[in-house]
Image 1 (tube, rainbow, N blue to C red):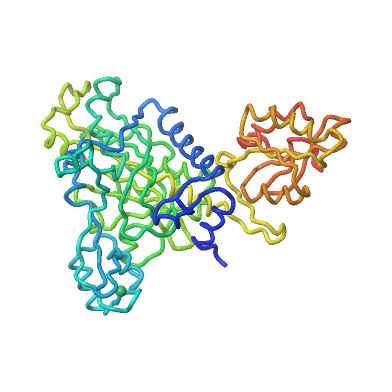
Image 2 (cartoon, protein in one colour):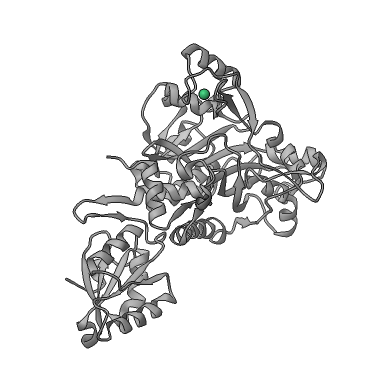
Length: 504
Ligand SMILES: [Zn+2]
């Protein structure tokens, strides 16, 4: 039986990965806290993304903006005017639900982007009733998703501020200062990660739709006349892709290479370049290729400023869902901020010696959703072993190595602790002496520890230990003195497990 999202939430709670927020007060819908192991995985995801897309590149710089900003930022971006979901309210029990979700649940059709009128019509035509009390719904209305607060001691209209609903706008408002101070030249990107907040009408599906979450976003700026992407290599790279055409014809997704997609004019060169980089990032961190695909947005799903948008979707037990969105936004945002702020935010382009507003490709994703997809992909109920094995990429595993003494006596704990302290300088290590060795293996399988080291009586004599591999359960005998070099090679995949010592 497939693992449900509820099973996953329970598993995460039991293993100290993710907890319901303020649970001792009966919790709060749409908010989750990361526990001791979850925070390690989350930090590893963020570190990997920042290293690959900011630090390792010469054409991307980072910023870290605030959560509250001058509210005019959100007027210019369009969020005050139209960052809303369609909401319907039951006439009897007054429960409120998101219109599109209710339609999707009731009619099993794609309802993203439907207007209030569309939703009213569908409710009437199909005689959809409140799932709670079977009464009629009232007329659909819109509901702004931004959280409001007040800045300063006066709680009046003048002092309203919004918790940012995305990190992206801070990149645009800092665009002028970055270009003036960072010696960047086109094409280049500005990246940011951090918290964002959306007052979701009906948060659900655990980490998938929460009210507070974390984003990782890049705005990549390109000269408006620059069509060619010089760094687009490997045009044979294959995606699974569901085009808008195939969605209209009810076809399944298919395989297409980068070249195929360019030939079909599905997107620009820079757009496919960024999709490939992010698709590859998910694969490199362990997502199985068959569980990943691109989905092209349908014409009526596209935001008015966007000429093309593709999601990277993951095959969750509750269906294919977005874990990354990459839009071609043109110069919409910079233009908006230029108009609303009346500041001259154009940049001087050395190449053409003119002032321009660049165009933007926006690779954007949630940290929490990425984490959820990594967890689902790694989760395996191993019937033979009789326990869950979380086959996380070693790059994401919260504990890289666990060290056990075979028994709690005769000097074994001391030697095991010494090994543990020595390895701790390099990566996360845990020491575990409770219960049978089998129980300790199982406990570490469940939290994804890639390697377990057991210290036994022979270790005292010949200075060797047993290393056990999580995925194959194979074991090798290796010298203690080699651990510091062998384990990092195993973790990075540079050494095959059988070569780490003498296979047992
Ligand atoms: Zn009702």
